Structure formats: structure tokens, C-alpha cells
Length: 231
Image (cartoon, rainbow, N blue to C red; front, side, top):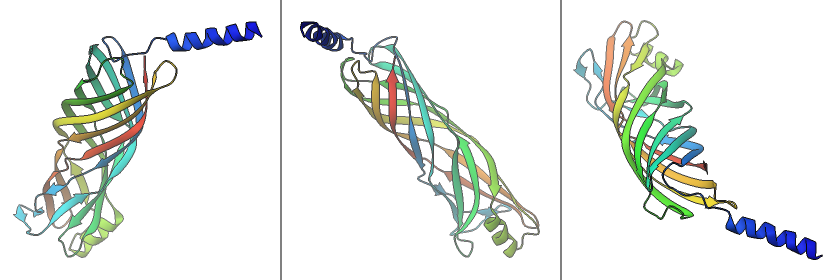
């Protein structure tokens, strides 16, 4: 019995005396979870061969994917974060051309680099943070949907249309919070929100009608929740 008690005491002492990993110079943090991009779309009027169509525009639907971030703490309280993700998919709706309809869809990747500040003491088990940086959004796999092609053909298109979106470069900001758990506080539950300045010029080449263009401010909030690990 004494041996069992001694072993239990030694194990408890080891757990209680284990070093608490901190948000300090030289440490790394990785986080992953489900991220949802919620656009705050503001579109110019659709322009057909340079002729703006009043009362028209486009809207971009939400999209979700796996979000991944990595942080290097280059000073106590200060880190650099790289944000990545699996591709997000978004539906694009056209408005004002008789009725709102699904025009097309696209995918994008949003690599983002941020400078972060962690205000609490490095050993704190609850750690809020904010960040400011830059975002590059790369659009790809743009296409007009079957619904979009059918609607454009009803408006006079002589064949299938093609969609293209310009890539975007702009500011980014974030706010988040970590809740550490586990014996050595390595594991984290994380919640964060990002704002990204995303603007693109959209062009639809419509056979028989010419070009339909619009300037679109997407400017989404990106919500992410998941787990993290410090080492």
C-alpha cells in the first residue's frame, strides 16, 4: 500500500510540476478547424459591353472549408501567423436581370499573413489575441452553372458563357481566443474571426451578347472554431 501511495504521489507531483507551455519567444502554435467565409457583398451594376444596367448586381453565397493556421512567437506576446485552408466554394447569384438566378460558382484559396499580439501573461491558460496583416485571394475553377447558361440563353446568348474573376490583394484583421487544456497545457480550444478586404473584377463572356462585367467587393468575415497545439 505504501508503494502504491508513493507512486501515486510521485505521479501527481510530476503532473503538477510539469512546465506550462507559454506564449513566449521561440514557441510554435498550430490550429485547425472548420472555417466559414461569410461575404458582405457590395457589387457595382452589371455592365453589358460597357453599358451599366441600373438595378442589377451580383451576390456571393457563404462557403465552408477546413482552416489551418501556424504561428511562430518571435517575441513574448508577439507572433507571426500564416493562415491557409482547403479550397472554399461559393455560388454567385445575378440580380436584376428579370429575376435573381444562380449565375455561376468559383473556388478560392486565401493565404494570409498576420502580425499578432497576445496581451495576457505568457503562461495564461486563457489567451485572447488580435492580428493585422495582408491577404491574397486566388480564384480558380470559375464556371457558369447550367442554370446560369440557360438563363443567359433566354436573354439572347448563342452558346455557353465563360466566367473569370481577378485575384485580390488587400488588408486582413483578426481577433481570437485560446483556452488551454490538458496536463501540460499543450492543447487549445480556439475560436477566431477574420475580416478580409477582397475585391475582384468579374467578367462573363456571353456568346452573341459580348461581355458582362462587374466590380465586386466581397469583404467577408471568416469564422473559425477548432483545436490547437503548442510546442
